[in-house]
Length: 475
Picture (spheres, rainbow, N blue to C red):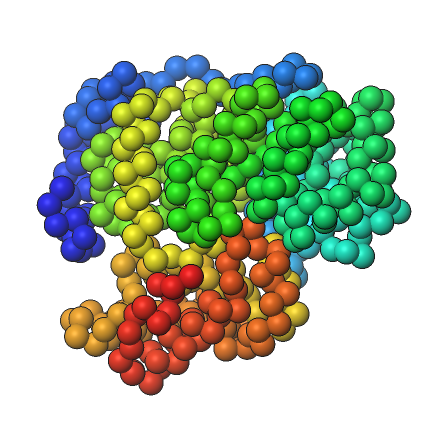
């Protein structure tokens, strides 16, 4: 495609409309020629069949390939009271179950401790055999490492969820912090993992696994324990998407490419639950010219569906988590997985090329997971980074006063920043305490980014010229 880098938004919309018209005004769902992956002018055909399911080897569970990530319930909070809209959660859960979604992922630290309670209320209105609940042991701070504190957290999950057993229990965030030393302090030295193994035998835990963040030595260590038969795992949760598949280490040298993570699990027959299929929303909000390429290839698919199909195509994937706080997201994702249209090798190669293009765009690799929060000095760290990334992805960064759109972009950035992040929670209030960085699964040097963003904002306010490489272009 000629001159993709310089396509403006107006031209993009014209060309996108033209590409969409190529399917003759057909409804934008379904699939075309799956054998070739080239369907821009193919005749649209309706999808048939319901939700795609995968089987857990140890228990025989038929798990929906689309899983519900309940972390995003925080989006349903009342702005004044801070209370999560329980009726809104109930409505989403009801629709999901009615359309085949049966895997719901929670954690005691999600939504400031409210996630398990509100999810439990919504789910307990349905027969227990209609859903699988995933819970976590989130003893992420040293003061929680003792056996007493960890088991207290574990038992509280049963209470908050109001359930007698947990279908999928995860050791949360293994690989973070001090690596193997921290993993052993959290679960081995205190005897907690032995307790959990006993509860699996008793049926209080039906499947036992872990979610991986960070240090590959910990990942390999847990698989070694499995190989030796000391501790066996029923599943594992990993980050997987078409950027991280082969290029995670290009964003940060400590990140691990997903093809290695998935491959090692597949060798052992350990099914994978997928987190961050959209890379914190970045793969649903790609730059305009990349969106055009995706739409030209398949006008009948949404931008996000490419990422979901990538995450769900491989047979060793048990469920792909998506945070869906809005009904339109839920309906669209159910459509994508009902049933899933697996990617061809040609599709895979196309997405790898797309990933390499995306890596040339200097977004900060924040997935909005909020593990860095709360900030002791009140910063809205994810809000700051997400506003920055949004402006980059939408091509609205005010880079130089020589650009004819500079003044408009400058004004839009500054106004949008104030609207997205209250002034007392902006980057200029960062003290550099570095308490956030150790909790970031993406290994972002958060204080460094706060300093750059603050300087960028001040230069905009003073209308000073700047070298763009001084700011976000360096990680």
